[in-house]
Amino acid sequence: MAGRRPTMSDIARRVGVSRVAVSYALNGRPGVSDDLRERVREVAEELGFTAHRAAVAMHGASADVVGLALRRTGAALRAEVFRRQFIAGLQMELYGRSFGLALQFVEGPDEEIALYRRWHAERRVDGVILCDLLVDDPRLDALRELGLPAVVAGGSAELPGLANLSTDEQAGATKLAGYLWSLGHRRVARVTGPPELAHTRARTDALAGTPLPDIRTVASDYTGESAAQATRRLLSARDRPTAIIYDNDLMALAGLGVAAEMHLAVPADLSILAWEDSPLCQLVHPALTVLQRNITDYGMRTARLLFELLDGRPPRSVRYGNAVLAVRDSTASPPA
Image (cartoon, rainbow, N blue to C red):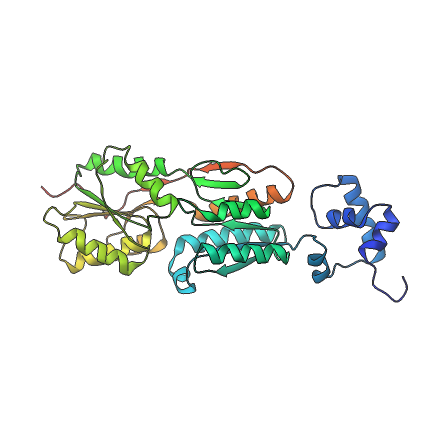
């Protein structure tokens, strides 16, 4: 081998195994024993072997990259604290395994599916994280067909062939509705995210089983502008609500601004709550009552589920339910 770079085939001949076994051993893939994995690594070190990234991808070994496609713009991501915290959690766990993150913005499910197919064909990623699960989501069958390891961040039931880390929306709904009921609120509204999202429907269904089943619902798109329009419509009605629940922090902050614009005092005239928290919810006046979850930890646990798949373990569904009601200054009993 003098004068040339050692290859996986050289290692395979020295160890007495196939080149595929060497590839699996060097890239942490299932299918080889721990003893063989250690022997292959010892020989690779003796020979001075260094993997060439393009060759690794070409021959089907690990790319050491996880893919994440998001249906939103970069500007929207900067404003969305939840997703930034989630990505921070992913990155922390990926860093510990020396993996990278391929982040791509897409327009819709069809473009996202095409991206998965390209990633898979070119072996750009070892697996993907799927976010923003839809009620009838075509991406699930596409990922099953490809055989690409995938974890769904969301959902409320097991997804055959895929791992998922779902959130306990029933627990959150019970805490929000139970708290408002105890304060005496009976005219309650909710400004939701897009209705086609699975967790939007899950929250709606969860609220139907609480002491406040007749909550008036207005769909929005998670932006401040859309939430402000929805809030103006609700507060202009003759039987305006005495409390409004917003599906995320950004919309709740917009609702707080509309209340001030319409000369309604919070919480004396209107109580405001957010289903998600962020630092801004504590900095505004009055500070917003919210459901708190450790989103960074949620991202880390999602990455761990994907690593279970990459390590050869079967997919499993895990329920994540650490929401805590943080009562602050934006809620009180309704006006007499």
